[in-house]
Image 1 (cartoon, one colour):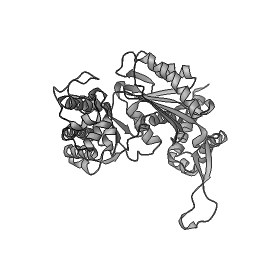
Image 2: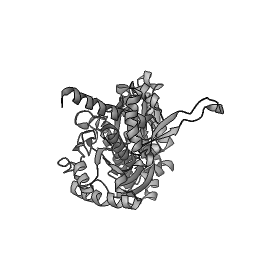
Image 3: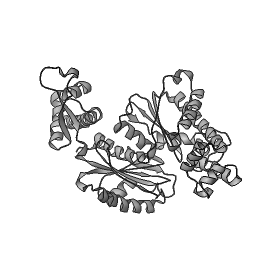
Image 4: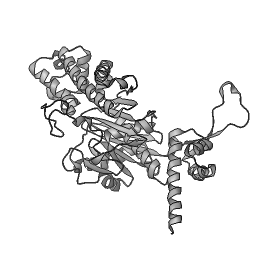
Length: 406
């Protein structure tokens, strides 16, 4: 094939993905509006839309009637993806659990399963996922031919755009290609992404929460991350290490971080693991009666119990949480001062408390460059154990929109 013909095919394929993605993100939308927004001709739009309608992926709907019921002529024909055209399985593999969800093409939750299994050795995790995913899909009643793919999210330095795992901070993982090996066992397309980035992609793609960029997604969990989206692109950085705010040093000579080994990392001072460690010390010293009443064994203490003790007014627990949220607020302020995001979305069990949200924002605003204080929009997400797995499902949809020729 000559160069001119090759370039034509590349342009045609590029337009196909561009049009498909734009309709998904802005539906319901008319052909004319898509053509205007993308500076393409209406026949070009129809050349993509017509086959997708024929495959049952797109459908035509009537535009809403104008207010008051007035308006001449036929109603505009709008386009939208058919939510039930595909199912997606999302899996959140973490230090507390492995959670599974089944969604439709628009991210609507169809089924879920929460387990007490945790991220562990590679071979054991691979074998577990190979058994449990088919079992979950059978239980959920999902037909194999309707499954668009399986998305896996987990903590670590992971480049979802290239499918590469640099590290999960667990031994034995970097020698393997989880997406390829699990996909071969399951017989379906598998994509892998960092857990915080997956949540951000879910907020953008399924919930359409990203209304202004740069956009930051601040996740507080076992560790923490602050992932960024700029000009519609997820920022990965070298070795997929962008957004690893948990490993920024906030206390010189502070406690050793159990993940990276440095001293004074934010994770070592303000992650859930650090909170539990400090609260266990309170229990062992007899300083917190509320924690002891809620949990007899310090080694079995959970974040739910810590937050309940805080709600009960335990003074020592409150001091721990105030200290933790001050560190988190400082780190958040430093990110805002550096990147100047227009929107910051905040996610985490610890932030489900109104008191903790106020403490975090108070610390952040005290340490923010003044010009950002009134111009940064903060959006707190209600805690949901399904959010990570749903984000993993969104990664599959994103890959389909960007790369798939279906």
